[in-house]
Image (cartoon, rainbow, N blue to C red; front, side, top):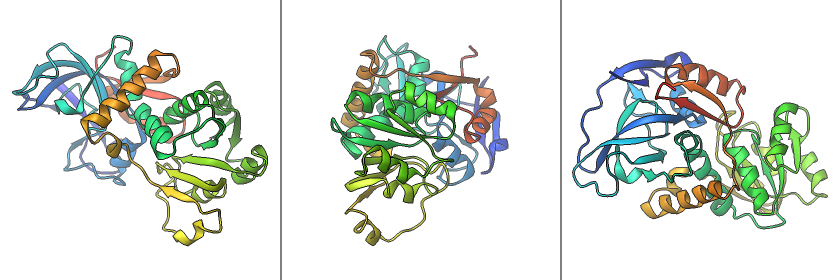
Length: 327
């Protein structure tokens, strides 16, 4: 019997149910994937509570996973039974097995484990587009990274440091500040106790940062704008505190002719070429030792509700992996 975590209604973590499902055989262009490890991300929370659409209910949540191909449908030539693969941004990850379009998958090199892939596909490809596309970080830039001890944040800090940036990390506790510094942060800000823009100006000698990578949303949007240098880029890519409230673009002019962007990973992996390029850069950075994947929490897939509670309660650091193979 195959199981999956599904929601039958939107709401809190109590809506996550361990259901028996029928996977079936792959159709044309599909594979059946026996999953070993699934990633946990804040987008899963947004879909669970209804902020983001999750499709028809009941719905299987989860946006990334890794495993082994156990059957292929007609026309699939890129993958064969037994291949180790992973994917990002394809809903249905909270399952022991699933059907998935082959063009959503990437092959895993021997240097990347299933757990690493499940921990890093969505977060790592997010860090890749943030640093190389949303605002291409240059040596000598100062940048502001929120949730610097979290899954995306820890990767952003490591990678940005390698690119030659001065990294300022926002965190919620002294313990997380220590983790952020271990990941390459030059400076940390305790956002609950310190004035973020004032501290940024102090660190940068009044200049401000080239970019603010803000995954918090509503609670920190204005603080991020006020931390930017002239022509700086506000990259709003998450809503941990709720969606950003409507604002007038006119406020960007007196603050320094600022830029605001709201990117999504889906756009940056929308074509096979984009997905392959991002995955190659990500796997290369891991294999070369530039990125260290920190899986600080694991849960059985059946215990996903508790994983959600811990994520929302800010009791997690680094990446969290849900184990679908019973290990």
